[in-house]
Length: 243
Image (cartoon, rainbow, N blue to C red):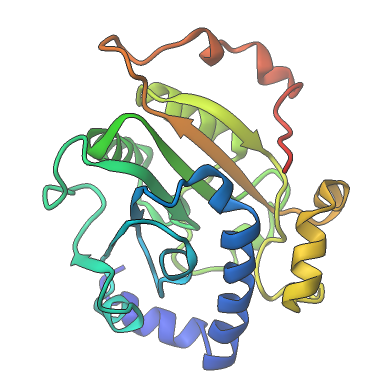
């Protein structure tokens, strides 16, 4: 999309953005922070309005997005770069502890472009660094997945997992059903209720429309494959994560 700023101004009202921000504060503090030591250098790819990067705790925070409006949503201490996720040359190789993206891959024009994004992210990560992503799951939201004008690339938790393995990552965690598909959900979104939801993974099985993947850049100098990358888990067993 050439005019991301205009599209997102149409899609997200001030009220909607405020509600999303409250939800993301809880998600960061009570779920995603467990994967991110406070001393980490964190890069958020496709930062949007910065709901994640503003609320996560890290020693250094970097954000990249194609939307120029993103910069205005970030405090000065967050380093912002206007640019494409397929060209992260502004980030030094092996300088990042954790890469993060959410609701991003579905906007990419092809799987070849997704391969480029994962390759660039892997380059920026230190050996042992993590890429954490949260995405809408086509398997559980086959209709609403296509309700957004800029959704292009169809992905489930399994196909996204394969993409990470293909890119040389070790996939260490897959949560096939996590939070609801969007903040348009009728579920209560008060921070205390979101916190209670995160503590009850059984509820995820009924309401979750997005998946989470945690992938690790190998510490060896090989091709990134690991015994944990075998295909036996395609039966679905062992893929459900928890808190």
